[in-house]
Amino acid sequence: MLTTGPRGTRDILPDSSGYWQYVENMMREVCRNFAYQEIRTPIFEHTELFLRGIGETTDIVEKEMYTFTDRGKRSITLRPENTAAVVRSYLENKLYAGPQPAKLFYIGPMFRYDRPQAGRYRQFHQFGVEAIGAQGPAVDAEVISLAVELLQRLGLTDLNLFVNSVGCPVCRPVYRLKLQEFFRDKLAQLCPDCQSRYERNPMRILDCKNETCTHHAQGAPHMADCLCDECNSHFNGVKELLTAAGISFVINPRLVRGLDYYTKTAFEIQYAPLGAQSAVCGGGRYDGLVAECGGQPTPGIGFAIGIERVLLALEKQELLPPANTAIDVFVAPLGAEIQPVAFQILTAVRQAKLAADMDYNNRSLKAQMKYANKYPAKFVALIGQDELAENKVMLKNMATGSQELVDRADLIQMIIKGMEK
Ligand code: ATP
Ligand code: MG
Image 1 (tube, rainbow, N blue to C red):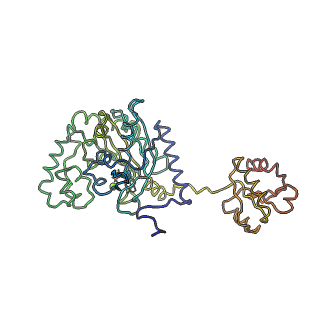
Image 2 (tube, rainbow, N blue to C red):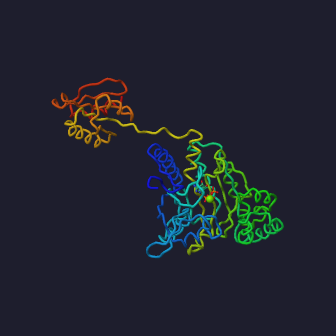
């Protein structure tokens, strides 16, 4: 127990933290290019925010939240996603008073009581963006193209972008009735979840993963055929802009979200080689969410990308950069009594902004050279009794094997010169 973390959690160890940094840096870089700025919200929020902001009939709220009562008897939930919290922060900090749309991104851990398997964890990480305060289709296209650009910049191929429109509170009720009509005589064959969805949220039957439900959903009416004029022209606008930007997409009528505050554009990016966990990105418009959270009616759109799944995809395509543990200098004292001088040298080297380390275990010369090679180190600064007495250091260039006796005062200059060669 003490030596095992909770189910569904993972440690990101030194041998892979470099991959995370690589991917996160790319996310920051793309956001900079698209003029999105970072927002960091707390990892826990009032449970009420997620009940409102995610919806009580969703899988997340029904069965996946980490909810607890704190010592002040408040109901608190570890964030299962971040859109609701960003909207809460937008309202609380009056970001609506600044330039609109507010273009925000976040990177951080999310928590869901999911069934752990490859690409599915209980603590996982998302990179997401939200553009709040713009209603035209151009911002939808921007958000989608940001996700596509990121994944392409990372080198991923075999990506599929699916888009759909889920309509709005004007046209959706008509569609819901049509769906209920369609499923009425199939109801008994649907899974228990879908049977309860039938009344509460029939659109969600369309994205049920149960095979029988998928089978019975074939031939179901499409939302795209029921869109009101406004939703229709918005959808056409998004398609036109994506095409203009050279982004290929497939229309997927089964891509749905059944809640009132999800409107118009819905999209997903899949990386098929990941199998059951192939969705790397999910997003869409939420024109009703800000009002649902207590603000003035304000349009918004965003997406979230699962970082673990992106890393799995990069691993599959062998696109992860090699780990970089290399250092510039390894300081090698030959004898315990030389440690203070070696440490003094090490300190000066680090202050000169070189990457450096030293031996702390009184290893033999041979063992220290082996140790230095493991990083690998570009230079080894050897200090034995003779060097100590003369205020010198034996500087060995590990690439060429050449070594030279240098004055301690010149050491850093010599290393920098040697590195330039
Ligand atoms: P799924 O259908 O795979 O459960 P979802 O619809 O619950 O996905 P979203 O809420 O849209 O997922 O979250 C956006 C992205 O976050 C997903 O596309 C996925 O990449 C990632 N994600 C979601 N849940 C997990 C999880 N438990 N572990 C790892 N990544 C996850
Ligand atoms: Mg899920």
